[in-house]
Length: 214
Image 1: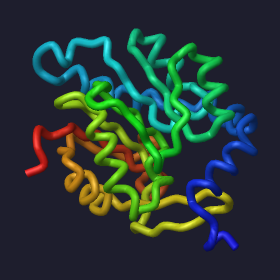
Image 2: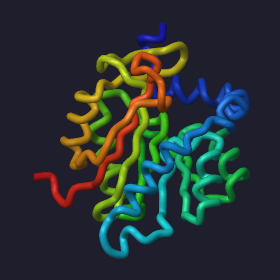
Image 3: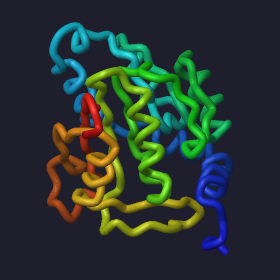
Image 4: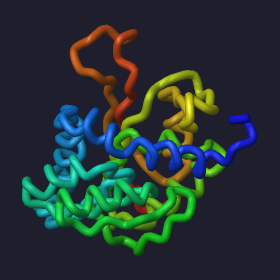
């Protein structure tokens, strides 16, 4: 049955039905390494662009954990999630603007954000839709804007994992999508930090919006 389900509808339904347990299970996760990777790349840009505070889109913000932390650090954080329950939770927890948008039906303002924090979210986008979505994210970034992503790594396979749809990108495969979308790689690393590679299921990467696509 799963093979015939719509990836977005099925995945959002899962999160909506499990919103409270997801919040309880993830609120204390330490993603400070990932936040630092984005903020350090933003600060390293030349001129006024790198001085901050930064306007950051938390793409797939979930219950709002990272919105709270970005705000605490003095930045302007905007959340986005397709799950209504998460939008309500994130707005209440952080006081931030939180956009209720399906990843596959984005309506983002052009060149609004200095950075995008896509922590464990972009892997839910089917590969056939990914180039379009990356293009929309790129368009929402200011010149020289930064995109951070963290995805479960794999061999470029996709499909259902329980009630959630996902794509398990390899580093080379992920690079092809990002380069084609107009991003230059700044760095990548595997998580959790300090473990043997076979115990690091997450691929994190930092990208900068290029000035053109040629």
